[in-house]
Amino acid sequence: MRQRFGDRRKAARFDVLGRLGLSLFSSERLRLLNIGRLGALVDSAVPLGDRSLHSMRLMVDRDITDVTVRVRRVVQITQEPSVLRYLIGLEFVQPSAEAEAMIGRLMSSEPAAS
Image 1 (cartoon, rainbow, N blue to C red):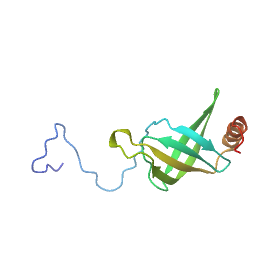
Image 2: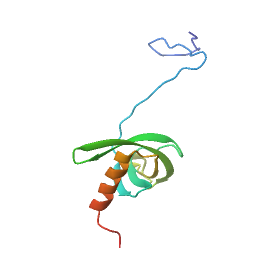
Image 3: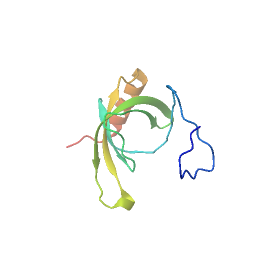
Image 4: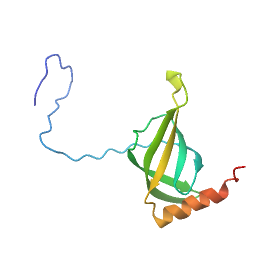
């Protein structure tokens, strides 16, 4: 352990030497704005990193499936710091047959764009 001058932490921290794998899970509800066979557009209070991969859970009625998505575009849509909002374009990455079926059901339940 290395203590830095002026470090005010109450608990000890230890340096990691070499490589250490870590998984971090965070749950953020995103509002689905539109969906297609290849991807979706969502509204979020949290910006996601460009080209980052995420596991997304799709829920339709009582059916749930997970799909991996890649962030393709992030656009900040508000200027006020207290209410930051982002539009995030997501690409589905190798969705399972189950995920494709659920996406198809979501698409068929939406009114057609004019």
